[in-house]
Image (cartoon, rainbow, N blue to C red; front, side):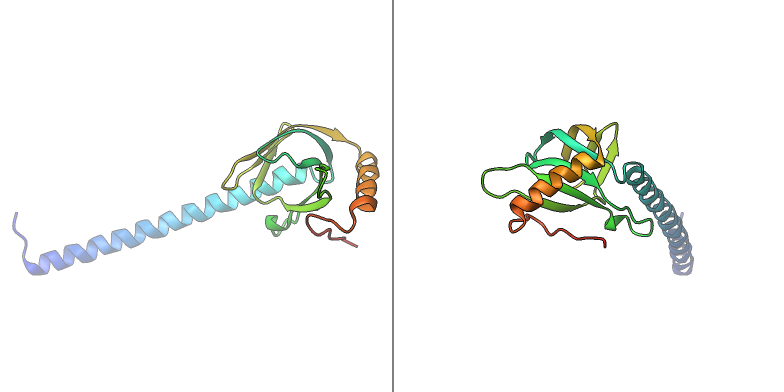
Length: 154
C-alpha cells in the first residue's frame, strides 16, 4: 500500500498523539504505585514505632546490637529514624541514628532495600526500660565516640 507524503505526515501526527496519551497514562500509573509504596512503608514502620529490639543476627552488618524505632513522620517517610546501639568492637562503639526509609519490616525481620541487601534477622523485642538502661550505659561510656549523631527530639 502506497501512502502520499501528506498521508504519512498525518499518520506520524496520529502516532505522536497515541504516544503522548500512552505516556500520560504510564505516568499516572507510576505515580499511583509510588504513592501506594510510600503508604505501605509508612504503615510498616508505624506498626513498630517505639518498639525496641535486641538483634540476634545480622547479615552483612555485624555491628548493631540493639535498636529502637523512633518517630515515623506521616508526611515524609524519609524522616523515619531508627536508633541503634552498636556492638563494642573494642575500638569504636556507640549510638547511631539510621534512616528507615529504605527498610521494610515484617515478622521480626528488618530488610534493608538499598544497594546491598541488609537483613536483620531474629530480633527479640525488649522493653523500652531495658533499652534505656542499655542506652544510658552506652551514652556514659561512649559519649565522645558516637558513630553517628544522637538527635534529641526535645
